[in-house]
Length: 200
Image 1 (cartoon, helix red, strand yellow):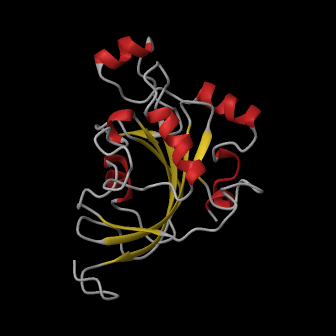
Image 2 (cartoon, one colour; image 1 turned 180 degrees about the vertical axis):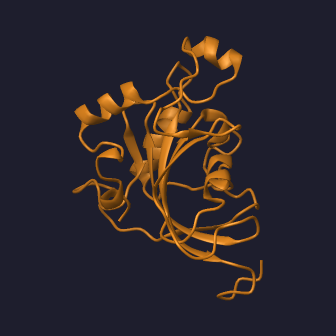
């Protein structure tokens, strides 16, 4: 669903295309210390909007209906890629065939403002309406916290073992691997308190 709407702009599937995307994607917002460690200045991707937090986003498709806000329950479909390191998928739906990613997955649900997901996703989903698709480029400081290596407290957690390994390889690497991530997200539904059995 997400890939068909994103077309060529979605993270690549073949290794050659993945490497090319990784070269062209930016180092997202880093502290001065991190910039020195990586040896690169902060770069913004021209087709994306940069927020004050350092998140970059691009709206691919508009939605309709109630916009997500703090306190709402949001149902999303999502894909994740380690764009700072060869564009490897750590969460994909119907993209990679014949492997651990080939099985279908359930949609992901969370309540905006509960801090149960990474800060980048909390920020990015606000204002989105059902049917909307947004790409977000996530700098390390807005991604998965080191204090939760199993991703059991702060999601979204990859739904396959292969996905967890791909993500953890980058996050846990002590070298100078660029830990910038890309998530494609599609809002499937927004539940306001009192709707669909959601009490808030």
